[in-house]
Image (tube, rainbow, N blue to C red; front, side, top):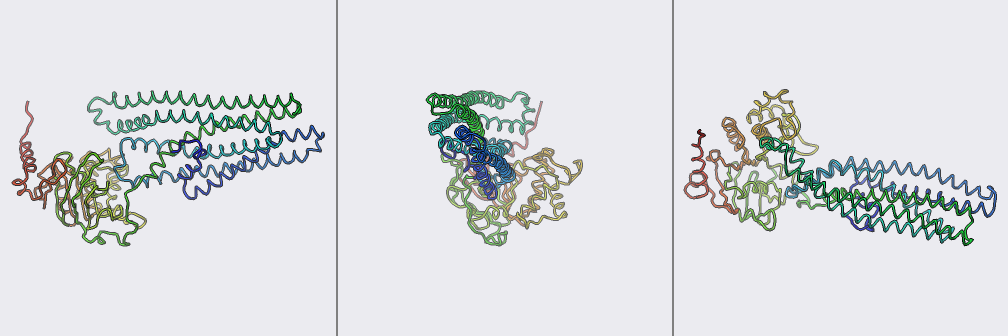
Length: 602
């Protein structure tokens, strides 16, 4: 985001970066119309003084009739050009509102998951609701009006400079003073913005957190007294007050400059009249032009200030759009389905090292292989990197060293669409969209073939997958059945019910590789048994990898990968062998066996 007043002062480059190609063509026309409107307005205003001066020198209206006619033509032309400028500026604003949300959404979908964090979540939320609207308003009401005003000021100044150089120089000096004061005012506003922006984002994040965590807060009796949100609001109030004071000081400085300019023009014109260099009638006419010039200066100050406020949202948009994406191959085979992979369903980790930051290593030299059609379980203490393994398979991040291969091809050599076609993910807290129960299940089919040629599964396939995952019971419970909306995030369903919908998606997609992160963690024993049957079904056509703390669910796994707390592989083998060879696995098994006999007593 530019901070120097001489670097893109009118925001033309910044607006170009957020407009579509067609929008940029409209933007160029809007700027051209703004310049033309400013020239016509400036000529109409500047010619007042020479016209009156000609009347004084030659007498009679006949001698200046052509001047008056020219001024009338200029005024009419200025009105028509102004309307064209307004029309194209509004079309630019519509282009931003129609396209920028889509561009940001597409970009966010291509960014690594590691880019998203608490601060950025608040920023994106604020940008999506208020920021883009303010950008559209700024291009419709700010930038073009500002260009028109600047052009009118310059044209008026040039006409007066030709007529009376002393007065023209006085106008120029006044405009320069206003520009310098604007620079100082902007420094104050920037300082206020820097004080407030992080607190504003923190408030947005805490509000989202407060709304999404209501069940936990109410269970703890904290729904009316949530200290993190109260602290964020207090900090925002303090920084907002500082921002207000700095902005007020900036406004006073800006307006003071325009007032001083008018006084200086009056003194200069009066001195010329007193020295016999300016006729009294011409003096009065010039003073009228000076007052109009003051109005233009005040418009310039207000328009520049309003346009300058949108630099923050534009900078946030540019930060998102310019963020480096995970590199993908330039071209892929035309047939990029699972059959195009040299080893469909194969998962390979070779000496993988990874850390979320440069100071912390999560995985160190991890190597194992999951053959097609097998069940591989990942076991280890909390923080050992189990979920990280799954995220690296999906390329949420790029590894630091080694290689991760899916279907026999390094994930870094596949496009995101090609990689996602091979994988179905079922995580601990599955997300459901605010749509019907049936539509949420059908997503599993639509994701197989994204794009205009996507083919969704038939209703028979959907209902078969739903029946196998136990979703039919949910449909029978809900008012409206399969067509009942599940609410934002699936809030109308329990955690176990959301998990069953997610399992149904996996069954419907029938991808070569299925990743289950604690898929049975939120299920009762009856539904856990049902999901175990689903996993057995998935094994017939897919490679299944599962993270499970409930070791009873993975006793029959083809192999179990045991991770150390430092992110290394301790052992790989089957259940019975690991009970003898792996202290970590044997300890987990004994702990679970002991916990099975626990009971509550008075």
